[in-house]
View 1 (cartoon, rainbow, N blue to C red):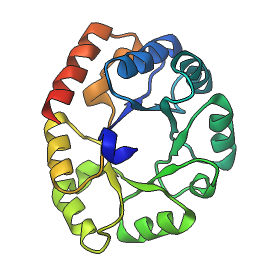
View 2 (cartoon, rainbow, N blue to C red):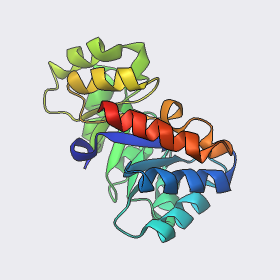
View 3 (spheres, one colour):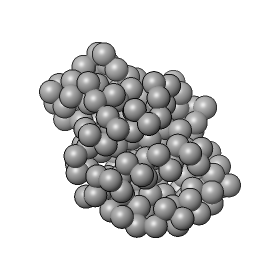
Length: 196
């Protein structure tokens, strides 16, 4: 799923209707891995409505999943995968694939042992692509997805360094989930896709 699509768009905002429009626009423009952060206003309703609009096959995830209660609620709303910011109890949820947040080698091992499907290298900007390369030496078969400060230029570098995909929030989504321009969002999507 990750290696084929290469980009996970991260939607977080304070306007639920705008967040829903943003999710749908991302899918319509060909970004077909989208995470709705649970810090988004009415996040579970956004996921529920997006699932209804996009159908069962859409890869629609829930992010900032901290607890098993969060994981259960996200699954019931229609999430098909979970994303955590750290090695939380939700990593071992077991019912959905989990992209688990980790930064250090110890955290990577803990996330994998808890059942993570892939590792969200977070915050990626702290180490950059050189740090990703260093992690890939002891973990050559671990699917890493850098998240946090991933610009279009950085995305290209992370993918060259061996990331299976990148997670991108504000450099791609901008202010769309807070009511900003969908036309500008579409332009950013096209520019981003053109570089990958």
